[in-house]
Image (cartoon, rainbow, N blue to C red; front, side):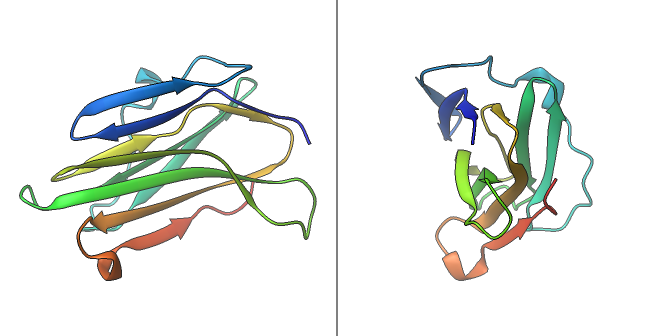
Length: 135
């Protein structure tokens, strides 16, 4: 298994902290500004960008402007069929209203999938989790 993580990123109320990790690649930025999603209140919309530079996971959620909303997106990898899925990179955003999170870029030859959980931050029972098919 060969995996390289760009960084660990957390955004809270619009303030982004970036903790560097070894063997870094450039974090994803503006090329992922827009994700085409159906608007479903408090349900995460997930997508990814995969190319020769790695894979980046993106999740966004539409919410009422006064709601404290959380969105967490993960890139998960699987070294071999039947082995457990490992969270390789993740990003979390906590803010009022709609929110978006973008993972650091992950370079790997392993099987990958993107998972996201989103919804009201103060009511875990109303948060929704969804994943892509493995790719």
